Length: 326
Image (cartoon, rainbow, N blue to C red; front, top):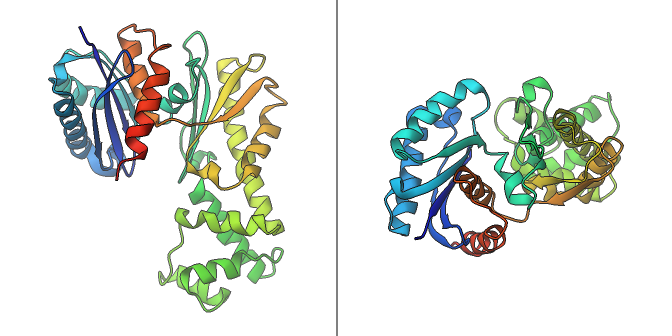
C-alpha cells in the first residue's frame, strides 16, 4: 500500500505543495501565490492552502484525508499565538491527518542536510534563522528587523542608499553606488536620485541588491563594507541559534538558503569568520534542494517514517519537476 506525504511551503510571494510517497516518488504538485497571513489575511491563507492542497491531491488522484503525514512551512508562523489559527485551518483542510507547523525558514534545514538537525540561515528579501539539535530542541529568533535581525537584500539596499546620501552630504566616503543607482533608475545625478526617492519619482528596493554586489566586485570600499556587514549579520544570527541549541562543540551543517547568497562569495567568507570562532566544526553549505522537500520530509516524520532512503530521490525528483516548470 502506498502512503502519501504532503509538504507545503508558503511565502510572501509564492507557495508550493508537493505530495510524495515514502520512496521519494512525486505524485502531485501545485503552485500558488502568497500565503503569509500577515500579507493576505487569514481568509487569504485558508484560500491559498485550500487551492494548492486540492490541486496537488487531484494530480495525485487521492483525497486529502488519505495523506499519512503533512509538514507545513508557513511564512508568518512566528510565535506560539500563531499556532491555533493555522491549526484550525489545517484541521478543516486535512481532517485526521497528523501534521507539523513550522516557520518556512525551518524547512530549509530539513531540505539542506541529511542529518535533519543543525542550523539554517535564510536570506532573500530579508532573513531568518532556525536550528534544531539531535534531541529535537528548536532554536529560533524573532524574525524581525525591528529587533536588529537584518541582513537581506532589502536591508542591504537600504543601507547602501544611506551610504549614497552620506557621500553626497560629505558625511561619509565617496562611493560608486550613487552613480550606479542613478543609472539603474534613470536619475540625472545623485541629488536628483535622492529627491526622487523622497518624492516617489524613483523606487529602489531589494531587487536592486545586485547593484551593490556589482559595485563591490569593482573594489569599491563602501560597497565591500556593506557586503561584509551583511555577512557578519547573518553569521551573528547563526551564532545565536548555535548557542540556543548547544551545538558549539559539534560537527553540523549551517545551511545557507536563499538567493541572497548568489550575490558575492564574500558573504559566505565573512559568515565563516564569525561562526568558526564559536563553532569550529560547523560546515557552511548552500541549499541545493527545493525547500518544499523539507516540508515533505517533515510530513514523513509525523508518520514515524525513516527519511534516509526517501530523501535523495525526493530531492532529485522535486528539482527536476520545479526547475523545469515554465
